[in-house]
Amino acid sequence: MKNPKSYSIPFLLSVAILCCIILPGCNFSRGAKTDFATGLKLSYKGFRIRDAILVDASGNKVSSNKVQLNTKVAIAAIGVENYGLKDGKAHPGLSLLVTDKNGKPALDAADLFNTPEGYPPAQAAELQGTITVGRPMEAGQTYHVKMRIWDKVTPGNEINTEVDLVVQ
Image 1 (spheres, rainbow, N blue to C red):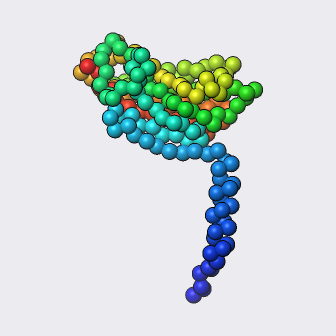
Image 2 (image 1 turned 120 degrees about the vertical axis):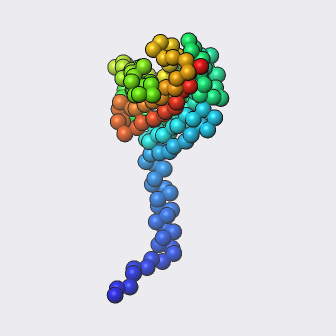
Image 3 (image 1 turned 90 degrees about the horizontal axis):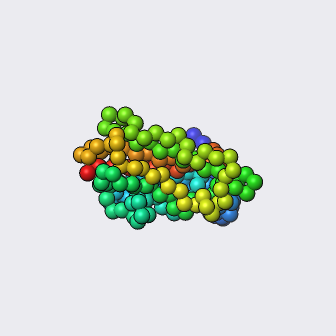
């Protein structure tokens, strides 16, 4: 039986230091988070993002996934960074899907940022998908919301959020 190859501590330390120097330059980010008060789930890769929250029509953070009929609620992605830039502009895509308990779409927007001009990166740092809680939605029902943000210049960059909204 062969002896396993062993490495000296200085060699392993050199490799660790080299990784610490090289990897931050890659600008790669990945993570996941859940807001336990609202049930909003966030996952991201490629992008850096400070937070994703549920907000009311005035832009105030809400503390529950219960929403009133005939109001508006939005998922806001805050502090979005690391876009690939084309002519100095960010080119985000944002889709929004709201389905009932049977999976039937109440809202299906494929790309709410379908524009060739792009946006200054600072303007694209805060994005939101707004849902008008009204017909065909009904009080007493729960609806599943999925919002996806992607980078049209760097396709591997993406943010996914989802939450169940209870309409009252």
